[in-house]
Image 1: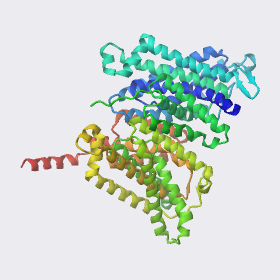
Image 2: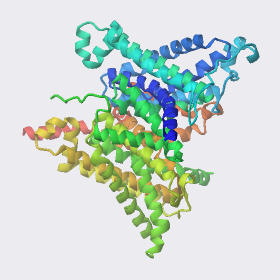
Image 3: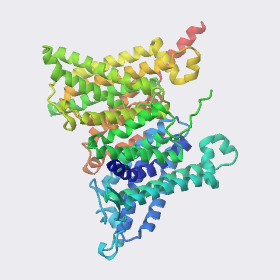
Length: 315
Length: 306
């Protein structure tokens, strides 16, 4: 019994990271009906950026904000260059472009930084990055690296790590904040209007391109936060972390109901807990298939996802 | 030198033929019926694994030893098993729309990969090896030709037209009395069984298959082949398969600096093709080449007026 509770508690932390990534998929899909396959790579680039920024001696909040801005603007430029010209060219063309971008970013990072996992404190790789930023590199002993809290809530059989609690509340807080932003603020309401009815939204004066850029920016910024949490929790960052976590986060977004903000959180947590349960009960070789098994079962019973609303097709 | 070149080009040619068969199968699903399947490689893996299991375990048991007939039976087993798998996936999943269907097929591929890693009789994570070499370049291209002819023929039948009508406008098709569910289902099932054929050819040419063949990246390569070439034509799918197999092979001979980063150039090519020719390369060719189709079309309409 305590075992079960223990696995659920562990799963909440894993699922929270999925949820943070899933929010980006969900928002972009809500507005453009596009599955941004390159979103997982934004998470990976964010994890690298923040890790290097911290290793260069930036305090972690500054590194996080810098990373959010960098990756956010990167996502906006990516959308302007690669997705915007394809609006109106059907659904498949942007989807294929997204897959191409995902491949490109993965391999670019692998080419500049190398395929091996990096861990805190990371040294800049030889080549262009150290030429440009080498002067900033400090001795790792002169500053302290941020750590996730190491303490434990110990209830005898049930042990919960402080850092898991922190990660969980970050995810819940971010989701609630995002929902509040979308409901109350003017740009947030613009995003919702665009998702509901693009043409009507333009008629009443919602700035189309700005709102789409904003959606990409927010999604990317949340992915960077997920990248920091994941990187610090595993103390490992690889060029391939985007593809595996990205696919599962996408599954989480669909599971919860794509386009619905709290749905991404619910979907992420369900998948995280399911994975941890399988690992706990010695079925870890089935871990990677489990997310999709749950997804298919839920889709067959509720095609619109756990929290989604069914949409009728109109002629 | 020439001999070496020929020997070297056999494997890429086989891979091209197999990719082209996969792409033709997906063309029927994606271009023909308008269903995005992101798990096409799963059916290919189903066909490959069951054909391999047939040759290694079942064929000796029933006393079938003649290589030609074993290969023929293995092709049938591969196509049939992939067809059954396609049917089992399609019956529930075709109720889902657009991206949800894509997600469900992707999910099926991931589940299959996970399951294959856990079945020891077919090698688990190490992969299935020790399969006799029965297929060859000739086999691959004969099957490719037959598949091409079959799909071209299918497009002209009532079923083929029903599939196309379902793709173009599902609601309008249904109002004309077309059973849209049945036409989607048949496109999906036939497309899957073609993938199974490709799998059977692959395992008997390379004598090895691993669970990675059901991987998401493999499915993506097939989708790219169909879309880069131009998804509404059979020729486009084969052209796309040629590009996908040839470009990495050619870049292999390029200077070191380019060769090591060939995946980057590959991804860039994909993005640029999509940005400048979203309908695929085949539409560029149609623009550039003198139009044979147009003159015959004109004479047909002239005949209609007379």
